[in-house]
Amino acid sequence: MSKKPLAPSATACLSSVKPSLANRHLVLGVSGGIAAYKACELVRRLQDLGASVQVVMTAGAQHFVTTTSFQALSGRPVFTDQWSDTVANGMPHIELSRESDGIVVAPASADFLAKLCAGLTDELLLSLCLARDGPLWVAPAMNRQMWENPATQANMATLRSRGVLVLGPDHGEQACGEVGQGRMLEPEDIARLLAVHLQEMPQPPAGHLPPLRGRLAGRHVLITAGPTQEPIDPVRLITNRSSGQMGFALAAAAQRAGARVTLVSGPVGLRTPDQVHRINVQTALEMQAAVVEHLPAAIFVGVAAVADWRVAGPVHDKLKKQSGADLSSLSWVENPDILACVAQGSSRPDLVVGFAAETGDLDQLRQQLPEKLARKHADLLVGNLAQDSMDQASAQLLLQSRDGSTELLETAPKTHQAERLVHRFADLLNALDKTT
Image (tube, rainbow, N blue to C red; front, side, top):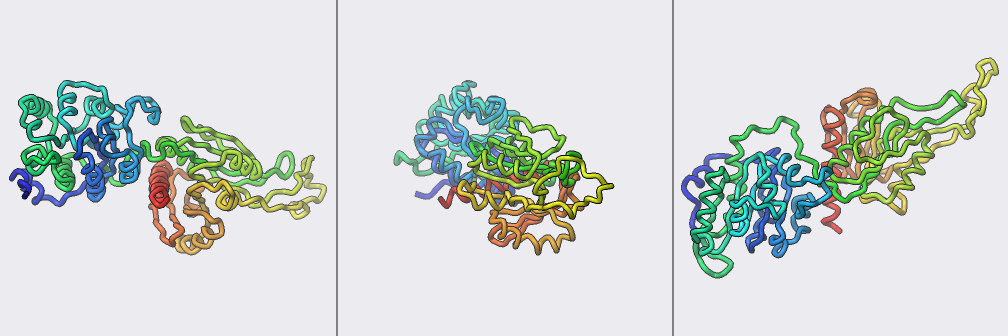
C-alpha cells in the first residue's frame, strides 16, 4: 500500500530548506504505542542533523521499547520518573525543559493527548509539557478510528489553539492491519520538520554546548587537582604554580552531569564545587593513598601537577645558610606516577585520563604526547602549554587519544573546556558500553 504524501505545505517546507539542528538540544518524549519503536530511529535522525537528545518515556512506552535502547542511542540516561533524585533539586520536570530548545512527543498516543489537553500530570512527560517555556510538538500515532473519534479531534483542536504544534499524522497501513489516517510520520520527516520550525528561533551562540544533565548519571568520577607540596625542612618545600582551576572546573562539570565526584586536591584556595566530596592532601604519597582508597571509579582524571621528586628524609630543623648545607646534600627519591599506577592497577577505571603540562610550542607538544600517553597507559591525554595556561583562567588544550588521533580545543575559559571534556568522557564511556 503506498503511503499518502505529506501535506503540500509541509512538503514545500522540506524541499526549500537545508535541514540543520546544529547545537540544538531537544527533549524527545515517547508515549505508549507500537510506534514507539520508530522513536529509536528518530533519535538517530535528530542526531544526524546535529541535535543532542534527552529521552523521557512514559510507563506505557516502556512496554514497547526499553530504556536501555534509548540510552545506547542517545548517550544519555533516560528519564521515566518525576520523583527521580538524579536532578539535584528533585525537579526534573523543571530542569529538563529549561535546558532544551523544545519538546517533541513521538509517538503521542490518544491517551497522552487527552491527558495533555486536560492538564493532567501523572507522568513526568506530562509534567514537562505543562511546565515548559519553549515549543512543544506532538506526532500523533493511533488507530484510524481513534484518530477520527470526535473526542480526539476536539482535543487536537484545543491543543492547536494553545500553540501546540502538530506533526501529522500520516495516512497508511497501521499495526492493526487497517488503512487510514493516524499513522505516525516517518522519523526522517519529523526531524526535517523540526529543523524547519527551529530555523526561525535564535541560534545558540558560537561555542554553545548541549547541557550536561544526566550524561554521567550513576558514575563515580575520581579527580586529582592542584599542586603537591614536598617538605624539605619545617619551613621550606618543593611545589609548583598549579592553581587547581582546571581540576575543580572538571569536578563541577562532572557533578552537573550527574556523577558522584571525589576530588583529591593539593593545597589550593578554591571553593569546593557543590555536592563534590573533597579530600585535602599535601604530598604526592598522600595523594596516591587517597586515590587508592577511593577506587573503584568509572573515570579517573589526573589533573594534579604532582611533584616528580621528594626529599627522602625531610630535615627536622631549619637548614641554616651559614652551615654550608645546600640542596645537593639532600637525598632525593622519585615520587610514584599516580596516573600510571591507576592505569595499570587491579581496580583500573573504565576510562583513565591524564593531563600533561609542557613547555615549548604546540608542534613540540603534539610530538611529545603520543609517547607520554603510551608510557602512562592512559586512554586519553590532555596536553597544554604550561607558560600559557598554568595559573590562568583560560587554556588551549590538545587531546591525544589511544588510536593516535588528536583534537585541538582552542583557547577558552577552563570552565568551558571542562564541559567539553566531560562531554568527551561521556561519549567514550558510552562507546565502551556498546562494545561490552
